[in-house]
Image (cartoon, rainbow, N blue to C red; front, side, top):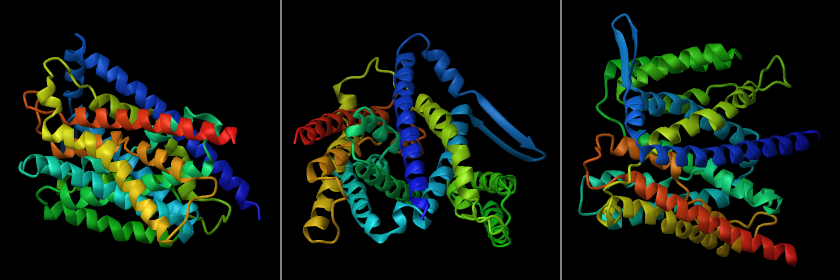
Length: 398
């Protein structure tokens, strides 16, 4: 009886935090771009290439700072994504089938069509084809940041639709990373990862709710995952699935939601802006039209800007037309289209998949995949904003 207000309050806080984080992402990206095109660029590169090592006996993890951010801090981001997904499926908006169908179908279109557009431009280049998944992602923080600029006119149901679709997008990206971005497997290290799973399961079953205990096992699993050849960030998602939703000794306390609450501000205001700062510093000097019109940035940019809106809106329109689902309350087809355009903001996840795809790309190469990501995301954000501004303004006048 008293759950509705708390759920509404949680959703409101979540959306506000994500929106503010999205605005901070924009600032971090702009700062990185400015620094990368000034004399400070040399210090920017030196900072990101600084070697950081952790050694325990004969065990060592030694990586440049950039990879500690991408493999280490982003594992925390994926951990929080896993927590959000589990909560939504058990007690949130995705617990009801009717709320899953529309964003789920939209996410399928939003992954498939951008990938096909990318393939269209790069089918004859086996090396470039590795980046087919880059335009398949949606950046929820950036998208909600743009929605925040529209104020209270945006229906909460539209924000929930966009958030749900982005969660499904993240799940798709996680599956893609697991299947297609795994290097040579170390059986010994993978065995250590597997050994952590029954331990986490047992901890969940006997109602251990200590965050420190789960994080301790999670750190071990993450370190083993790095050595296994499977991308380390997946350890965060796996760990999230074992965090208890409820404490059986205290029914009013949720370890999962408590941990999610603790992490959310750190992820939104530190980890994601730092990731954006570290990965979006593109030096524009010497960049010509050939660099932008290369198949990789062109396929990414058009995949995000054209593919996302066609895929999401087209698949949703077909689903509604054939009565497989219906529009959320307070949302019409025009505002749904505006949200679909906004989903072309791929940024964080696109940059992340791009770093996995072209890790060995140097500044001397013909293309920089980040150019396509930023241009496609920027065009989607601007067009999505103006479409929704116009649609919501007209609805207010009615």
